[in-house]
Length: 282
Image 1 (cartoon, rainbow, N blue to C red):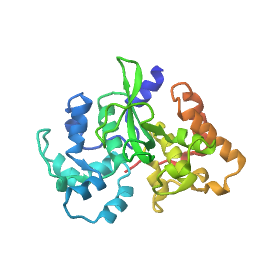
Image 2 (image 1 turned 120 degrees about the horizontal axis):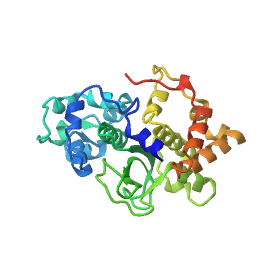
Image 3 (image 1 turned 45 degrees about the vertical axis):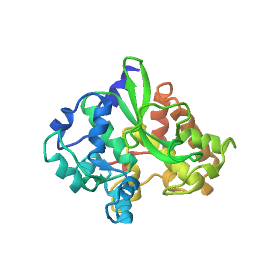
């Protein structure tokens, strides 16, 4: 367990900021205060739309793929303008904040905690608390509570620190339940991809995040990016063979108990993600 904690205490290629480290490290250790800081800097596109100020909504959504690491997030013009104030004591209007989504909130939060040597991992799955009776694609964080010696979910984008059972479903759980007939596909809201392809996309995102390759999925989606997407990521579910289905089922099962299956997760990840599929952001 010590090896796992140490792994998640240290920044990875997507959560290692080159700038503003001193300012971010100066934040209080309290998670509520860290989230409060993030929410004064970032705003979700839907919240920005609802706040009333005018912006190009579609352009904002398209720009998400350009923010593939903490450095990209910090280099966002609105984010950078706030951080260059070099103070934790500031106020901002919705129009002054960087319009970025839940995955960017989760990566920002993880980057700060890892600078403080606190174990945290980003998770990808589905929230049941955003829209009633629907599974909404979502990214949150899983923080290790040393006092309780357990991992606990935190959602920095929705400012949620307490989770009842079933509030957040890991992508692996949704994949298995849909495959086994325990969950109707109609309940799962699509995003970039629909149906089982969308759930597979989320599952592989979660595995990337477990390996501290949090937003590698965006690098795999961008043509000019250096890493080549592995076949398992690009191949439609309708064209998967039994070996590939079995691998996805195994990955889904292992992802539900990371600590118990850490070694096998690392081994299985290496069966479809190779050096040419990885890159160092920036």
